[in-house]
Image (cartoon, rainbow, N blue to C red; front, side):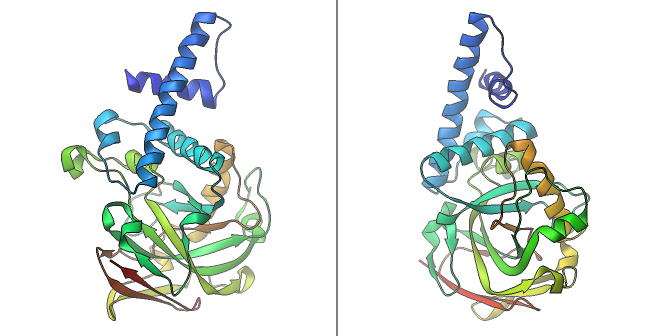
Length: 293
């Protein structure tokens, strides 16, 4: 029943479909209210850093379109509450992916950390977090209609910067069964975006070896992971191109000043307590921070 009302809400909110019939309008308004209740729940779990099987329990077959819309409506609710959009992430781009699955997520300024910070593990869902080594790209132009070529995309980027994503989804499988949590459940919760950090070294886009970056991650002084840009499926620009053209379909755009991170260069280590971390990039410098209890 709730699944059906979500689909009705999708039509009513995203496509502005409706009927002149008063009864149909009333039905759509009821669907909208129930849809809003789901969004309220997602935002609450994120704010409280709670892991939950809510989505896998209530919507085991959540579809991609609805998951995207749930994420966007969550963003709108957070912006209405006074949060500030910092930029975007693209997921599903790393490792041995058999195909590119462009999963986007949004980043808020309240979840940005700075190099050298001491960050409580309690800031992340379930008091655990993956440390992802990524490359960030900061834009110097708005892209309200997306881009038609890679050259147009590159011309809109100001500089590249080393980045850390603190990734941990709120989505759990039904009764803890990991097999029942789906990609779309993670997507609806913002693709596991729990925080980010940008390095201090900035390289102009026309000077950055976009295909040649490497990074090594050290946890408590020991190598925990290492990787390179070739692990990003078809490269960073492929992810950026997909995002630039996806956002207008969602009513958003890449804006001047936005940062976009494009996926981890390695298989991510998970931290569950106190630890010191350092990421060494080939050309983008180093980033250090501490995770505290």
